[in-house]
Amino acid sequence: MRIDTKKLQHFIPGLLLALVFMTAAQSTPAAEKTVRKPVILTDRARQLHQQCLVIDGHNDLPWTMREKAASTFKQADIAKPQPQFHTDIPRLKQGNVGAQFWSAYVPSDTQKERRSAHYTLEQIDLIHRMIKRYPETFEMAATADDIDRIHQSGKIASMIGVEGGHSIENSLSLLRVFYGLGVRYMTLTHSDSLDWADSATDTAISDGLSPFGEEVVLSMNRLGMLVDISHVSPATMEDVLRVSKAPIIASHSSARAIADHPRNVPDEILLKVKQNGGVVMVNYFSGFVVPESAKQMIEMFQVRRELKQKYPNETDYNREYNRWQNDHKMKPGTIHDVVDHIDHIVKVAGVEHVGIGSDFDGVSTLPAQLEDVATYPLITQALLDRGYTDQQIKLIMGQNLMRVLRQAEQVANELQQTAE
Image (cartoon, rainbow, N blue to C red; front, side, top):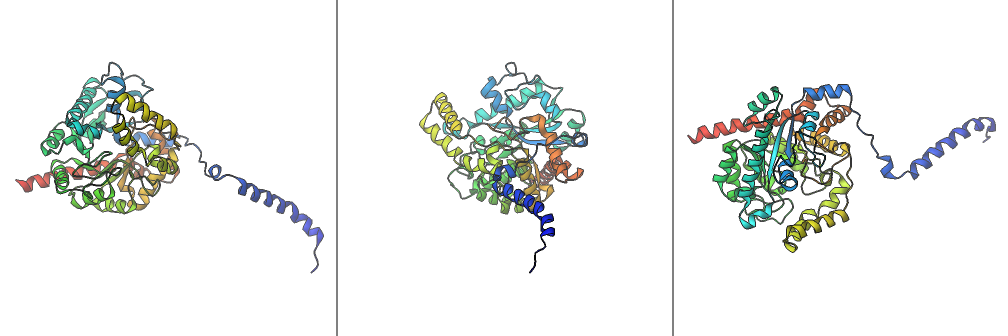
């Protein structure tokens, strides 16, 4: 075979260039290949976001106020910028927040001294005081219709979520009292298993729900209080979805298939949430949404439990826990990591079954571009960038949660009529 050297001369530069690119690609670290550009907010996204009813399923400002401001708005006036928090009124307005579930959280170890309900009532009181102090910004909402009305008035509709069934101290009477005070969801557990419901981050006791746990769920259905499966084990999720007569929520959880942490929702549960009509509201915490960080964080709840046993003095505990956190720095990730979870839930359960549950002021590390409550418009932009329609984005931002609220109210009315 004869080689035409003249023709070969034309091909050599191209071959050399191709070899250079192949070599460069092989030598580029995987992390550099997967770097995604920051989200750039456009006028199109800004206008669309203003049209959305933005509902966040979980904000821990009340606990942050207790821990950092002695539960007084004189010490931390949220009408003014509070850069030490994730939340203040100027940034809530920037984020166009239309409705917020404020978390009435108290640590689960308060049940040891039988003070969980006492402290929870104090947190509920703090939320009511906040709404009363800033009436031009907040108004308490009891129903989905209230949310619509308050949002149209330009205020932020406020509801309360109790984070952890330990707060009712095994009393259905307390559950009813909480509902009367504005509580519209309860997370069945926090980090510790109860004697009627198992946590995702503790040893199982009931293999899901006990008979009393099932009665708690049905009582919440009768009240119209949403059942929240964040923090609970997959077995508890299964039992809740079997027992509940109304759609359920995960107020601040993400997709386990993306970040393998026990706090996240497995695909088999996502499919059942779709059948139930519920909504999984995606958490922003880096330790639950960034795959590498989730691996690091799996031991967090156990470490906290062990340190509290070893250091009963709160100052000693905080010192040691901060030391542990400093030794276990996690990758914060970016907004894209959070939107990956939204994407996955949409693919598995459908766009009608996902929402936003940031966990602002309840977490230590947040992804880039999601540092505070002013950043919700960037989620709208990121969803537009991925091809979501305007209506799909409105569903994710709040309409899905509104549907669940209305259905829960309808179920409650039907169950109350049957009881009569």
